[in-house]
Length: 266
Image (cartoon, rainbow, N blue to C red; front, side, top):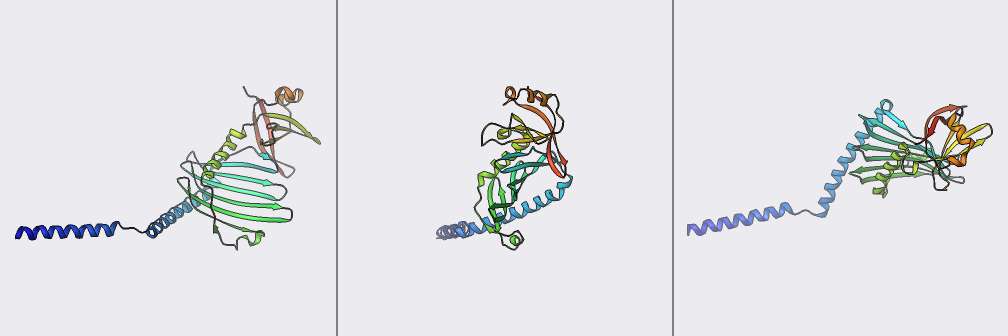
């Protein structure tokens, strides 16, 4: 009888424990959503702090600026910033037409995009649209994306940010695209195209005879041996790679990309 009581007690205890475990294991979809929301909020908060620290350090960081590239009516250049010898930010600065502009900042951690912010003005005739957007990423996956738009720049900050669907895959590709602009690689690996004259000024043009090819225009202030060689027989060197040195200089109040020296690439 005593043995039966002990066995019965153990059985009841086992049932009770099983029931308690089932209660603990039971998670509703709403619980999962709430947990994810809390996790994402913690990640976005950490990203905000990281980005703020990089922004505050920008004036003291080493950086490298790309050539200036043009395609259609859009012209842009890219700057990359380094901290502890690692790339931490990629800034694209561009303009289209006479009044349009685009400023895209991508912040990196361990070589992966974690945050992107965009300020853009697009124009069609007399109609303007101003856009600001912010995108947070965790392990290359978008966890939060929001934007605001206005037809008036002065009213943009009065608009609330609203969620939008961002292209997750696009940000890793965009970061690589900007890095290629810095390195003159990929679509930015541009050969000699022509020497062009406009008024009293001469320009070295890099690019390909393709409407979809980016172009680089360098102001020639002083012709060296390479420039003389290219001018003497441009067709012989068209499509050839050049090793050039250049700089951005202020000429009559305007920033210009200036050719300094160069040679034929071996």
